[in-house]
Amino acid sequence: MAIEYEVGAEELHKIGEVGAKRIKTWLDSTYRFRIDQTIYDLDPSGNPYTRLRVPQLQSGRFERFDLVGSLLDEDAQPGHEIYVECKVYSDAGNQGVLYDEYLAVCYSAFVALSVGLGGPADVEFMWATTHPFAVTNYTRLLEPEQIQDACEKHPERLGDEAFDLSIAQQLAPRLWLAIVNNRVEEMIMGLELRKAVAERIVELAS
Image 1 (cartoon, one colour):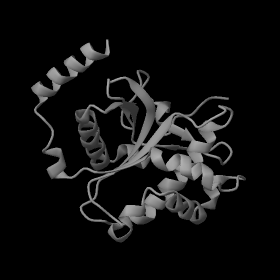
Image 2 (tube, rainbow, N blue to C red):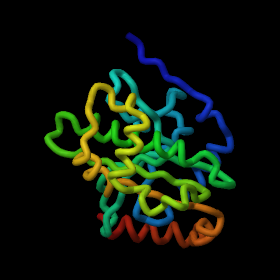
Image 3 (cartoon, one colour):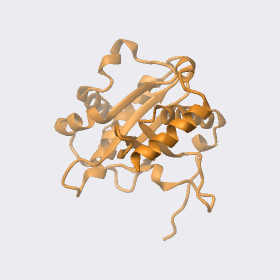
Image 4 (tube, rainbow, N blue to C red):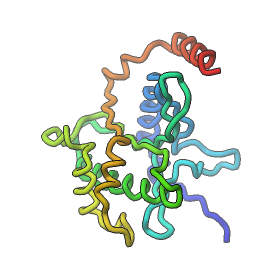
């Protein structure tokens, strides 16, 4: 059976592409993340990279994130793989609703990736947005109970599996929430200085 490559509306949305690449630049500039691919990058054959896909507990289903890369430790050594969902908003919009489904997707992917490993998969997830949302609930957005609420709203993401709070407790420390607005982007050092820092990091890591 041939594998078909799908290019959906999200990949073709220019605003989303610009936003995702802005967030990629910011993450790379922190030198704690190394982003390898975006959903808009194509392989030498002109197809989307499959590395951005994560499996779901529903049979045969997967979801795509906008960015994928590695979380770097203090010595610039790559650690957990990280999947990033990027949102470009000028206000809070409907992010609260979308975030709930995102959490259910993360839980489903975390379980699906961990099956057969004998332990939690070496993955983390980030919601990176240009505008804050759910401000009255902001301090709870990365809590296990928030994951539970999200999975209760989207039980289809769990397939035939029952929700397990202990898994949500393992997942919660692996979730990131980043607000990357224009002022945050202005914190990035100049390109030449970033290159010099990157060269020094390579020296330290070798």
